[in-house]
Amino acid sequence: MNRRIESKKEGLITSSDYKRLSVKISYWLIVLFLVLCSLIALLPIVWAFLSGFKELNEYYSVNPTLLPQKISWDKLVDVSTKLKIGKSFINSMILFFGCWVGEVIVGGIAGYTISRLQPKGSKMLFTLMLWTMMMPHTLTMVPMFMTWTDFPIIHINYQNTWIPLWTGSMASIFNILLFKNFFDGIPKSYIEAAKIDGCSNIGIFAKIIVPLSVPIISTITVFVFNGTWNNFMGPFLYLKDPNMATVALRLYNTTQGFTEPEQMLAAFVVMIPSVIVFMICSKQILGNNMNVGVKG
Image 1: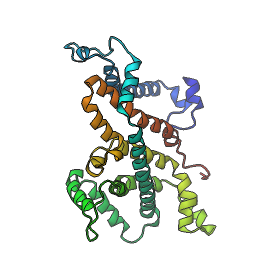
Image 2 (image 1 turned 180 degrees about the vertical axis):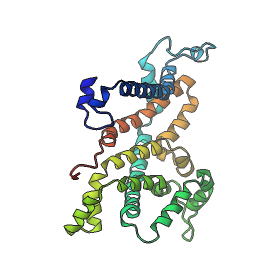
Image 3 (image 1 turned 30 degrees about the vertical axis):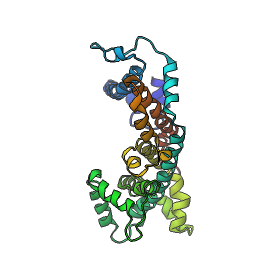
Image 4 (image 1 turned 90 degrees about the horizontal axis):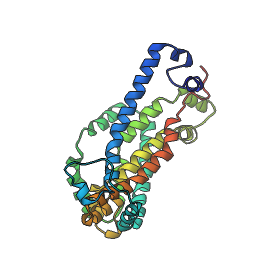
């Protein structure tokens, strides 16, 4: 353990601090607390996964057990086959890609403008934007639906198109806030050096800010993917064509004929892509270092 502490390049606890008994006790108490939180978070997932392998009489047993009497991997394959989410998977990826592009471009430009450019009235505008976060989503659901099903002036119905879902995601104040806070932490010396070299605001954003923003873009990628992958209400309202059904819609429509254990396994199968995306992006999320190239 001491070797791991000595090899650390970042963090509050150094190898010399770790030699003190009080620091060791505090360190291990924090580790135990985090392990406990992880177990609490993972328990429902493990319970649902293992319950999917149970028979109905075992599932509804008065004295439930965590482990099933028998684990048959064929059951997992059968559930995956019955779901038939191939087309729905493609539809969900189309929805994710459109939302991701919109949220990264709009959120990044808006966050950079408020954080660094700071035009006149930007602080008041940002305050008003934060106030809108307190507005319940259910309050805007009906007006938005009426707008997209009969768009004002041109009177076009945008149902069975991706436009309402893509456009709605661009107005994510939460992502703008994340970008703004991230850009606040970028050293001003980067921007000042670029301005001395004659770089324009667009050039600074494209050549300096964007490459440094890989951690926050990775974070937002995880949020956007989970949001679009698990989004049920939006596709349910706007995508009436069965050929445009997303994974969430497909899961809802298909599992109505499944038994409860099969529904547990189906939910687990649908969850796998979200885990994969997080594993891919986690290295970039945790690898942020803004002090590279900055003199102390």
